Image (cartoon, rainbow, N blue to C red):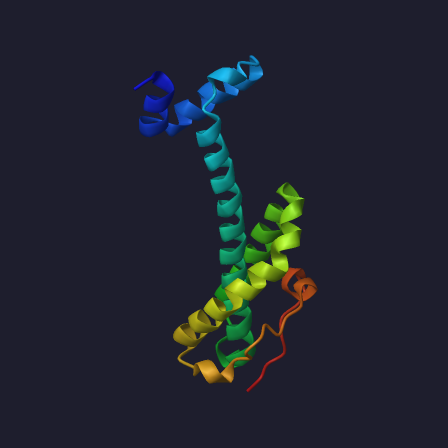
Length: 149
């Protein structure tokens, strides 16, 4: 096993640093292109998963806010604010992720409904089948859905 393979298996950070140095030195023939491609694809998938996860938490808390108004709390509002901040920061760092927002909402919403139902004790059937919030509302610091009880 050569140094690159050992670093990749045992010390991922060292592997990254070594490959950065090779790229800076123009030693492209020493880079394991297949592994580099796999890692770059994995990073892109991770970013999409993170966005979807944050959307799920945001929508779950918005649903709880809307469908259980008597239990609205500062912690729910803080969670809503935190997820919005993190989503916006992620979109600022990777603007092309904006193109995946509709897909992310579609994937996250059913999970958000399940999470909201479990946390509130409300029936799944009480929640809308499709996400009731537009992207602009999800990202709007001042948007809190009206109560539905």
